[in-house]
Image (cartoon, rainbow, N blue to C red; front, side, top):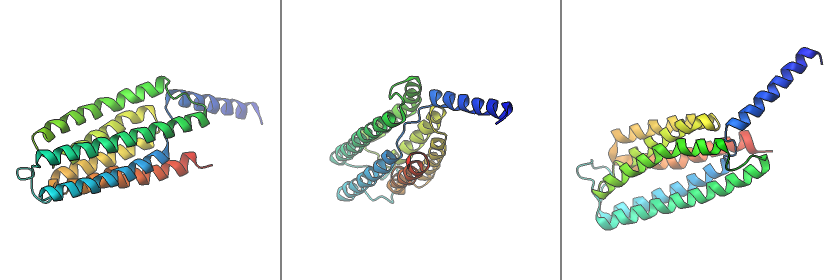
Length: 209
């Protein structure tokens, strides 16, 4: 190996080290798969609650208001899915960080968390406002769009592949806004199917030995 090759190899190694230090790369692909399964189960439970409440999913916003009891049940389902997803993601991410030797709470992780939380909290509060009025049809497009924005925003501090997932979520959210009566279907596709597909992709590309 001549000096030029040595210099290029050293530069590539330095670049790789800088990339690892500036980006949080311990996200687990398996957590995406499991989160997708949680979301599909939550969507099925929500569909059952809405059907029992007499809310016809094909109707528009002005007709699609659920009872207070149904809203509480939907809120409970949503919180349950969220808590399970967070616990699973944190546990698998910690396990992966131990394997890669990266700190679970370094500067890149803090930047990633902040960039994710701003759109997520904003979208969550907006959903609560509409749900307090009894409207459920706008919840799917709001959650998909703001979640997609959070992923695009956070992709600067983690793997670039997350940006593509975020753009797909935003696209599904916009379609869901056009077809409000089918929001639950779009929600299941976005948070369920896409998470499973991308989780498997991330696992086989970055984690599988």
